[in-house]
Image 1: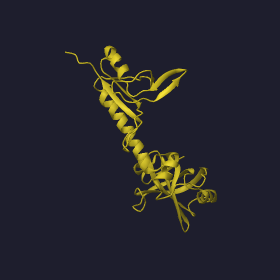
Image 2: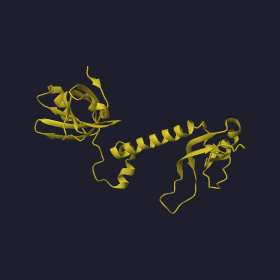
Image 3: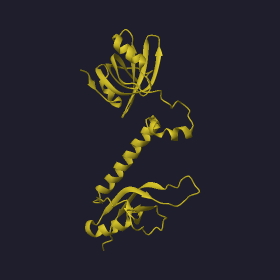
Image 4: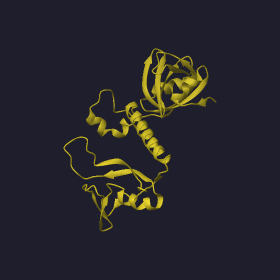
Length: 231
């Protein structure tokens, strides 16, 4: 059985048989060849399904597959500058795991539709790249503070008081008592520096001020390091 590899690792296996699993990102047909671009968490890779190179079942399943269907295939990886990433799998087998309904997002869609279909737009190359950058930034922010002896703390997001910023708070009914969504971990962090000295929280914060600009966020991720001044 061919080894399953991720799309961004495929170039290491030129001339070898590999298996690819993921979702159909693009598809087109030309004569007796079906070109399928498969997307996984790492990126994309093109596969060519030639009618003479696969059995009838594989050909039929490749013909019936639709955008965002989940598939798996195997074949020999070849270098091909015409492919989107410069590499292409010459498929020897193709199997559709699940066929997707018609995908509602096509090229050049309005921002309004993309926001309305956000759960589907997250699959796009643009959005997955943004999510990966976000994950890297989070990782390296934590790494920066961890290497300097900080301890990460996780204060509650529902509180009974705000910090010194004076920001307007979102009020919530907490089992019959008045409480708020946190706008800062300040009060908890300042109590904890007497125990752990250097601490930080990295969590959502909420501020209820209305804004006249499109840069104001009512909810955002807040990195707050705090430490005592010891003389």
